[in-house]
Image (tube, rainbow, N blue to C red):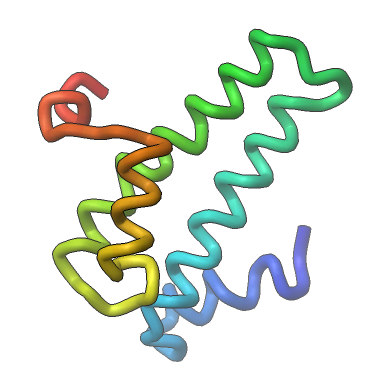
Length: 97
């Protein structure tokens, strides 16, 4: 896609942007883009489930890292509680993937 879509990842890979917020923002931007692609052209119940599963797996990947680092606003307790309520995860669920 180019432009702003590549500036963040290239900055992270080159070490010029050592900001965890940029990594998290780009990570969720990619997850939301995948959800959009899964839902279009017509959101059916199966596609809605696929979209939910995509975001759920994205949260399974990034949330344990955010909890360990405690560097972004997403690692705060209220945000963690909201994410756990929407996308419940356990260590056993993560191992299955």
